[in-house]
Image (cartoon, rainbow, N blue to C red):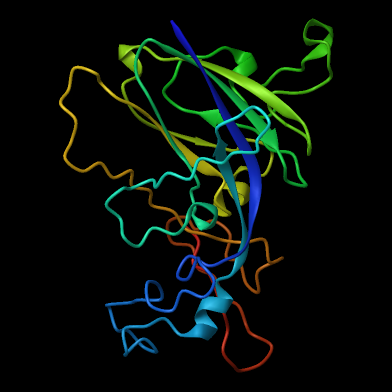
Length: 248
């Protein structure tokens, strides 16, 4: 197999807002053609932009083993509204072909443990990355690192084999104990294994459906899981406007 190294760094995107990702951009974002309540001018109000701000978390691709040269290519070449490379979520999409063996080096520059787990590819348990099913480096690797919980400042190399059976688009994401919390902040991406025998498309668009959510503490109200016939009642302590998130 052809071997290829990929370098990903887990890092924060401070004060990110999905409707206004870049600072000082007044025309390209905050648009809402639905013109709903409060958006009658087809714009998202500044107050709503601020309510949606959070410290996002991404896998950012670098071109060197020292993580000094970030890949700044656009994810969608024809997207005139794509945020600049350091203000987009997700931060990277990887492309590959059958016959490759990917060595994906993941450096954790965040303050909490994270990992790298992908679907659809061929790999061993030491590259699974799902807590608590990964492995410990131990004496065989000469260190005490784990594949399923990369501690802050540490790294792990995940190895994946690509065959014709893996052709397709596959998601990858963090898989430590708080899986959803990290993915909600943007710690996910995709690997697209192209079929070399197929003609290239005129326009290729990797498309994600995702809800951004930060870690703002306990919700004001939480119904827990609903089952058939279940109801939920909650009395607010005072009248007023309440910011809320619908979670499915």
